[in-house]
Image (tube, rainbow, N blue to C red; front, top):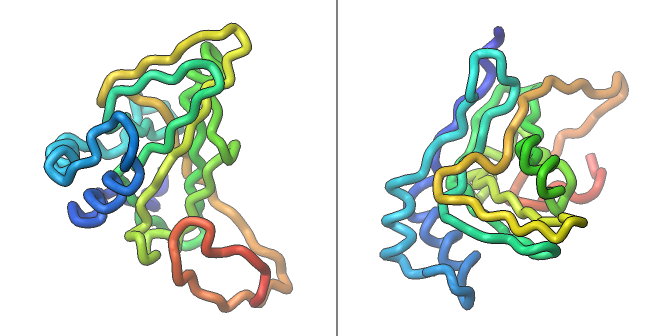
Length: 177
């Protein structure tokens, strides 16, 4: 098995900034003190078994999602990976099956150069409970809610892109090369 990546946490300063801005004005505590406390409990993604392809991402907070409700979760996680690889993020299979839990962008795509972006490559995951059976999803802090799978990718023979990432999420719009 080829080893191509390493997960780490974003800096505490980045975490506090992102946590507080994400949950400002909600019922989740968005204070620096609360964010600092949660930062100390963050877990890096890991595989459940030796045969698992997916690395489970764990919730930094307990939350409940009723049908049609969404939540944007700062994970505190970043990943450095070899060029030529990408990390795809999807809901954990069991949650998709039981609750029709979906990522708002269907599949998260984490590029190898995202690690070096101005937001430290902080991975956010936005989920929506699309349950047609009107099921409410409740997860405790530390539970697995999404999974990341590393895959190699190729480029076309005539590709000449030389642009470098200069921002975080959504910064690679356009095809200028």
